[in-house]
Length: 196
Image 1 (spheres, rainbow, N blue to C red):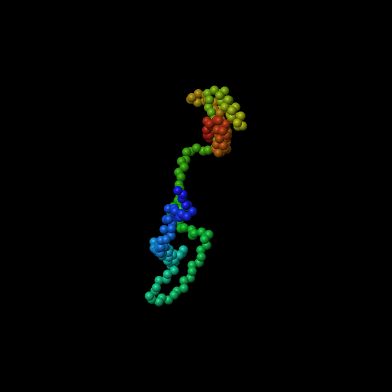
Image 2 (cartoon, helix red, strand yellow; image 1 turned 90 degrees about the vertical axis):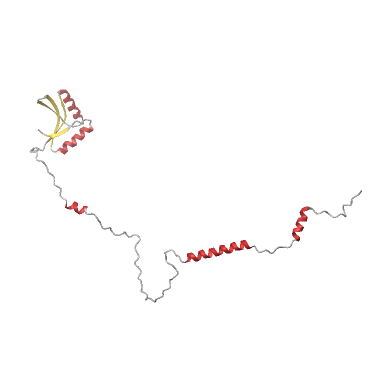
């Protein structure tokens, strides 16, 4: 058996038959309603938005003028002078009364009269010892600080004491100044009294 392939009609494939069927269908002329309604709605909404913001402006004035029923004479309004943006605000008024009360207030201080008349001379005692050698030792420490001290012997009901004394100073302030020097040198026991 011999087959004649030359005179035979070619078979059409499945893909080719579908495409030929689709091409044979009539084209439909449907109008796409949903996309067009969406576009019309968006354009209308945008137009309404523009119309709504048209009446408002940056300084709060409306472009729409209200209708007046009665004719009123127009009055010229003079614009207020422009304020300097760098100008300071006016000084506020004070509401306090204590300032006036303090200016008129008088303070009275009672100073008790102790009957002691100051000679004006002060002394500074930095130590009091039973042994003279201890007093001389402190006197030497004070000499190394650049000041001159004296050792005074005093007798009382408690016995004999040797006091290390600096001075006399003309004012208590001068004595305080020397006491600070002693504190810087490590001697913190100094007291300032009137010279006697």
